[in-house]
Amino acid sequence: MSHERKNELNHERKKLAVLISGRGSNMVALAAAVADGRVPGAEIALVLSDRADAPGRSLASERGIETLAVERLGRAREEHEREIVAALTEREIDLVCLAGFMRLLSPAFVGALSGRILNIHPSLLPAFPGLDAQRQAIEHGVKFSGCTVHFVDETLDGGAIIAQRVVALKDDDTPATLAARILTQEHEAYAEAVALVLSGDYELAGRRVVRRGAALRSDV
Ligand code: GAR
Image (cartoon, rainbow, N blue to C red):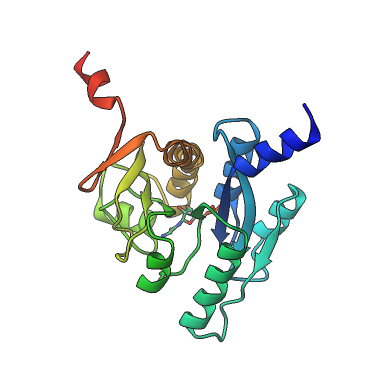
């Protein structure tokens, strides 16, 4: 394959930005899924953190991914978000994946990237939105929880649901043990959801994200 052709193919790849605040295990799982072909036609073009000391940053650098810290501390939200949007626009990012990015985004931010922001949350939404979802699930006494990948809209953890995975609770679960089991499911669900969204092989029917051909399959 000629060099020119190769560049052309690279250019056609969809550019993902992964936004993190901490550990970055979902980001690492997405990078692995992109690398092994489970998210066809994608590249992670940027890992952006809102804390310079987010441990996930070095994990991204080790994988040859550009990282950028847009420090949140001591900044007005509007100015902070404007800087993030500028960084995403400059790199022509196609899809933004929030992965443990612990900030509520303003309607202005969501509007600027309408329909192109995904989030992962460690519960079966709409149950237990917000912080400490695993603790909320245990304290509520549910027998099953899990994780949800959804489009981000102006509401807290309220956008249309793309993928979910179910995890059974154990009687002796602590928030930490439950979080660990949910996390392994998150890593698979996020790659699956990103692949679906990038493929464009779905329709939005009201709030429902319906895989094209799904109706036919369930008729069988
Ligand atoms: C994940 O469990 C993710 O679902 C959660 O933070 C963790 C980040 O882990 N996100 C939220 O609770 C958002 N409301 P990671 O940094 O290892 O991906």
